[in-house]
Length: 139
Length: 139
DNA sequence: GTCGATGCAAAATGTTTGCAAGACC
DNA sequence: GGTCTTGCAAACATTTTGCATCGAC
Image (cartoon, rainbow over all chains, first blue to last red; front, side, top):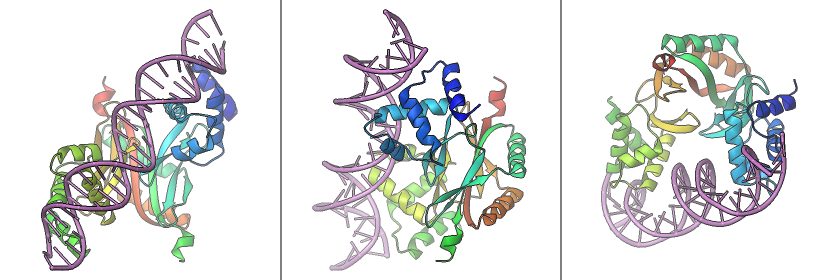
């Protein structure tokens, strides 16, 4: 099933309409690694109202279509693992660019173990790394 | 060196005054595991202006006295590792309470390795786990 | 046609700034 | 006393809400 099909199916199965606005926002999210609300609103400007963008993102979050991830101490939006692949991020503290980090089974296993040792059933995890990238180390 | 001494020294060494407001906010932060800006402002109400609380927290962040940590997709403030101990958090998705998770050397090692394999020199990391706590699992 | 989704306007919440008055060293 | 810090007021930014209209099914 393609991402677009999965998207349409997810909406329908949960009894939400597949509207132009929702499709457009989904498409915009598909084109980027991650995006802030501000940028997203800007990209849809004059076609979708701010309030609707917020409402859409909120709906998408409930339906696990997107995730809000922490970059610095603000958040950015990105499509969930169902639409891309499971990953984390590392951000350079100097140039502020961030890169995806691919899944690491060993690490995930440790997290699950740690959670369960505290009596928790782990359902989600996010890891935010920051450091100095190879380019900025040379400055 | 006690936390209060370290706090006073940190301010002085960086040429900032040890004022009543800063001491009060530091004290409030010492009394909690973590706190939102809203709660912090509330707790200082009628004695310290909102703007000053923001300015103080911003200063504390630059001086590495506090850290902004992600809880949900908002952030909370807590004293940095220099004043407590290095840890992460796990939050229950049902009751929303969060617990600290103690340091795990094995995990930290993996993160450093992973960062350096991408050319990054790791300087900070935050891990946010969420799951269902033992109490809520029984509901 | 019905019910849910959107735009618009406004309010609520969160954060920052300029400036005059006050506190620290 | 001089400089840094604070309060106050206002601006700015972000997010939410009510309601009338519009669009999907």
